[in-house]
Length: 472
Image 1 (cartoon, one colour):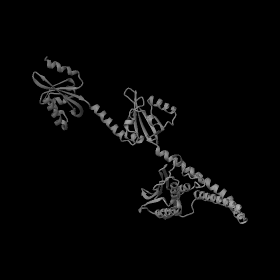
Image 2: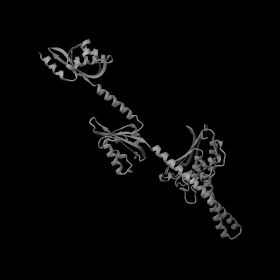
Image 3: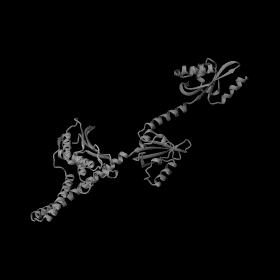
Image 4: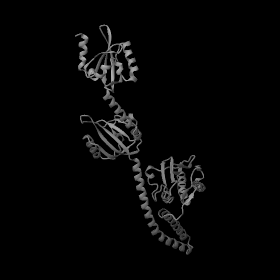
């Protein structure tokens, strides 16, 4: 037995395919694994390149020529036609000399399973990376080793800021430690955990999600990490708050109707008695004091009228209304006030607005309440500079949208959620009843519309009124 024969026989126990080919690719020898796997091919083909997938044949021959020219090993991936199937293989050409004759060892390693795993991993990555739901993967210690784009967008952190960190960096701290202890006990035992959590974005904003955490199990049944997916509940929470607010407003409206009835009748009697007393005296001091009483009665009467306007169904008939015309009239009325003389009104009204079924007087009352509040907010500023109120009307989807933006003092975050509640006002005592925006809210809702407010202290406030185009 020659040295070459003995040397190649060593490869018979190797699971990979080992071949000896000459400089033209002719197969000279094959180990046992090759003989078993290529039994059909070796009977009909004697050139290695004939079993390479046709589309890769030219490139593989080019790599082989580079091996011959440079006398160095080269590797590449391709597919071999074996038993009428194309299988993925890693091919390595290794040059060597045998009795001064150039020969080449071909090592073919089956990577079909690896390729399949790579494809599955790529699929998973693409699904995870492009999912609309925030996804994170952590190690056994809870440190993040992967986050998708949706997670980055939702949290406000960059990937670099998140990888290697514990998810507690965006925790709100509102949930007790027992909540998290139970979660860890569940996932550590290999079970799936689901719960609702409140996180904090990088800018401090709340982020409500339903969180599902699933342990990642290896082939031996051991937990190697944790896969977590979030479902955004922010919109759901917002809707719940709006629903609670609407229910509260409805309850207040019912209460207001009762108060208006119970207070209105005695107040009318008091007002009549004051009128009689005024006609029966000529004492200046008495007249002065009765005048003060009359003024307070007038103020209480206005509050009661506002309560009634909010709580009882309107007797007015809906008519198709030019919103721009009503808005323009409200702006002109606001401009007449002395407080508005130094305020610039920027008006941008779309001529594409359809006429809407509304009660013109009521919707004008809404516009006036917002505009007069804007004027008051600007007048309260100690330092004034190019103060203005911007009014814009436009069509967005199925709504007519009217935006009021002022440069006033703004509303603090703690007050912004109370702005539509009855008797709530940020004005000084006696300067407002706190019912204007409450009534406005009720009017807009009666037209199936919506009214929202956003504000920043020192910069101003924005009111957005949305009225549906088809609300019948």
